[in-house]
Length: 389
Image 1 (cartoon, rainbow, N blue to C red):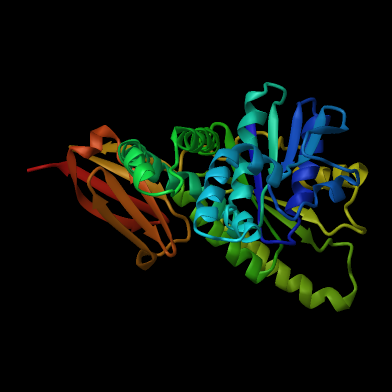
Image 2: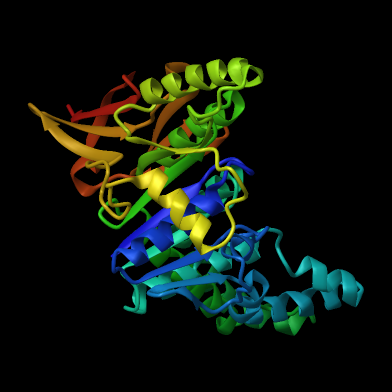
């Protein structure tokens, strides 16, 4: 089973790249589904065929879908939403405003992400291709499982027990609707699905992320940041896809300056993202819409390579023994020493990178040890743990 995530700055061609790759894999004999996690769905436009919330065949062995995030949200959030509406009604909030307040912004997109677990568990596909949202939205969504796990492991059980003890008392003293066990069970079910998705996405033997870029300064700069942030949360990036490269056949002098600029950026991409493999697709002579155009793009992009292969081996996070110490290594490509902060809190290692923070629960072998040193070297954070004196 393989899961391929395609992400990049809006407008770089990630949807086109995802659709083309899905068709390429299906033509090679694999069973493929491509799904859109981008709220601004354009997958149907790319295939030039209507798509709905359920996978439909767009080519032999290739299915596609555009998830109805609102529908998935209402299916999973019904019990919690009902309780929130009761609370808002008790507080005197008007019905229309209560309906809006009962929906946490961005949560519907998170529920759409849980569809990935259903696709992988169905047994119908060899490869799931995901057309992700633009990079900032993707980072936010992919970091939420890690953030929620902290709450669910520590505060959720306490909140549930407190509610069972205090709820009956509150019901006698006030008419405030108290969340019953049905509400907590709904929250637990949602988290369990999200946790299953996180296990799939964070497993480098299953999931690989591909960064889609154009040879432009701002696009490449954002891709560098995305690479670093995905690595922080344990997601493996194994390739860079460069779209819209000017072909050698374009000889008009008007493009000379543009070609020189692209050449500089292509060199920077090859050097900066090494050892990641870099794949290029030339600027097409027309819009890449419909299966024939997508197949032509895939042939140019992948050549003789198999897109379902593991293009990079290893893990973003690992623990190795070094003499009488253990060293935890987290790959953080492009991150500078001044951008990373590390702190120990009980059984957790708190890693802060700019505006992003990851709470990393330490394995049992490291909990009994103390942090001896933390260094940034060659794009990797290395934290050494020594025996307590």
